[in-house]
Image (tube, rainbow, N blue to C red; front, top):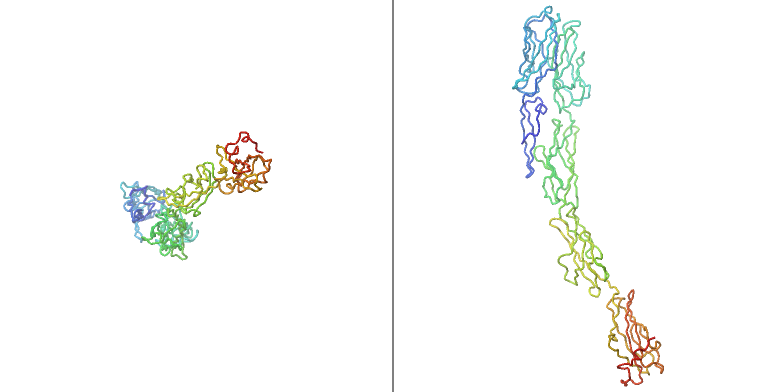
Length: 606
């Protein structure tokens, strides 16, 4: 340990014979504390100081050798051998010397001793210095000037009724309260018997807290006293008669303690925030309680407001530990406001409260949770690349990185059903995109697994199934299966001229790769050599005679059938149908049955 700054023993301990600086040494890991006391040794860093720089003594010329004049004691803030050890006068003279007297309390004080008779007519005044020397090495000195005025006969100095007065005053007494009254008498008459009082306090009490009535000798306080700062005050009262003779007495004022100081709570260590997985019994704070009052007024009890999760545990002397008593959960309670109350045993008792705000830090103990158990999203086929189709969302009860959710496709996808690598998910917001155009006729739905992971260490994750349904678009025209539409010459359907209306000539067969209404097909007669001779079933595609065949009808007939789906917009295809009107179906050698005449091939359709 090292001293962090300059130490002043007199400031810390005053005139106490010993000066101990107690403090507690706290080790954090493991948590231990030790009480340490440092004894502060005095050095001779203060010189003796007299209450007054110049003192005037008036002495009767009739004074006998051996007469003693009490002198004010020089004050030295040091102690032991470093305080005042001796007094001397300079320059030495034949009339006076320095001696020492002892009060009934055992305290010594200097006296000026008359060595030979005085003669005012020979010398009316004299002056010299009184020097106080302490016992330090090297020694320090203090000086006051003594002026001796030799008077004609006033042969009775004042006499106090007591050599030392002792009084008590409560520290909470108001300004102007009386402490005690000193009394002195003088056997002289007239002016020589009139006494006035003067008050002088110790040299270290520059700001006087007492005042004395110069006539009555009543001592009062000029401001409230503080027992915790000074327990007693030592005063000197000088009584001076009208002839200049004086006497000194001592006044000891003892300050009586009252319960005017509330307990103090001094925190030595405090840990916040606490991880939510902190074990019960963990020390959160270490503090001490103290009260500047004495006796019952300084006796302290300490308590904690009702808490299910924390308690107080006595540690050492006035030290207490604030500890956890049960498991913590940040998601349930993120902050605890703990109030420790310290109360003294005074009447009435005084209390003080120390508030501990304990924040609970997050531990990654909650995995992300999706807001749905599964998702279904839709996309139309032939979509544009990277089209947005929906979003997944997961929340994490933790905070910070532990609660920051990112999304990704799970490394292992579900084995059931078709799987497509065309799906992507935004890692930050969970938006789901289809990366390339899809074809309903090749892929009608797919399923992927999306994983939500937090940023904790180690990370926690959750998975959800996302089903992507492809919606059909009308992107496939009908395909005519019959009659064949290849480039080879088409065969002709044979129709007897005797056929009645409604005779089934052929049936146009077509399919559509789309689904739903996009694949619903309808058939329409687009053109025909004889439009009134034929009819086409709208839903069946059957080509029938609308009326009987007449002699005016051409042998070779051509029809163009339109096949149209129900999409929006609709797509269509055409089927060409040829028919031969024959009297005898067995005559297969008729011209044009297998290879039509050029002029017939070029026949017009109406």
